[in-house]
Image 1 (tube, rainbow, N blue to C red):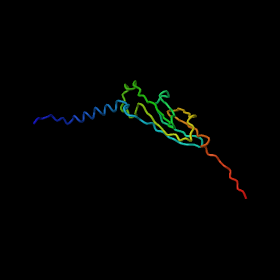
Image 2: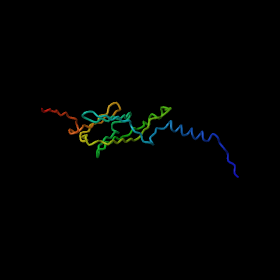
Image 3: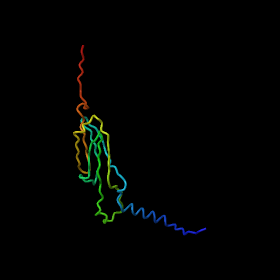
Image 4: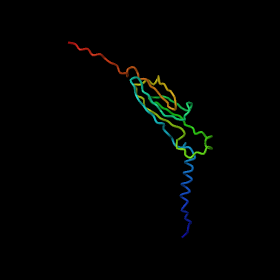
Length: 140
């Protein structure tokens, strides 16, 4: 029978190392998804995605096979690591969001706008899909 030395603080030190790494390093190893609101008006479909601290050059919007894809990357500013962060909770790295677009929307005339960290993507409705009013005549 062999005897081994039991160190009750070993697991505490392991937790402390993991916690220190978690607090002092940005989370780039897991994907993140920006929050998106989608609403429809009489003439269009609008998607609004929250993309704080994402540069416009790092955002890609495309439509392919009736699927709208928003992708990009939020980069961690390495020069700020010397500032003595106490906590880093926001995720960094690449993101991708995809949405099925119904056939009633015109994907050829998609428009996008980026202002104050919010990406707005607008898809107009096709003329055939727009509501129209038909006058009904009553014959006697």
